[in-house]
Amino acid sequence: MTRVRLNNSPVILYDGVCNLCNSSVQFVIRNDPAARFRFASLQSSYGRKLLQEYSVENKLPGSFILYEEGKIYTRSTAALKTLYRLRGWGWTKILLYVPSFLRNFVYDLIAKNRYRWFGKKESCWLPSPNLQERFIDWSDQGI
Image (cartoon, rainbow, N blue to C red; front, side, top):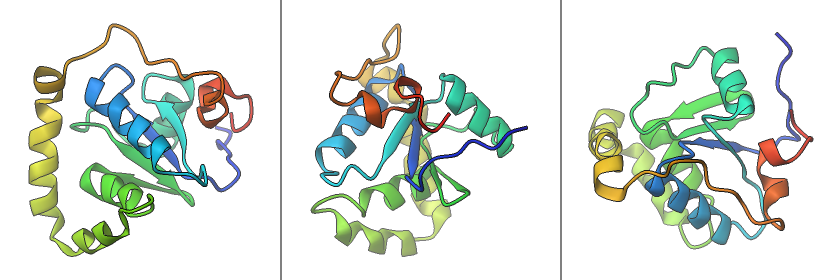
């Protein structure tokens, strides 16, 4: 299989039909003025290829996945590694010292109930034209 390549940009894979996940992506965009992060939905061809390439089952609760420097991070670790890089959220890096079983308990509770609590879309959110270059499926670069 051909390795998927990006220009060293961390990539967030998210559930494209989940309202909470889409809101999280929009939060990252608003708080990432350097535009470091790229995005792809888990339902996209890129998302499926990356999960297959790294043998990650797409049955993880919440399925928020961070791909960075050839490594895959999931669940609360992915969320926190993303969050502490955002403007004004650097203090959250200390939360990575909380044992992962505790962090993931909270993460899994929210993830398991995300559709019930926040709703679900019939199709993936479409980024505006000025944001499309940050979304891998909207850009030929990186696929």
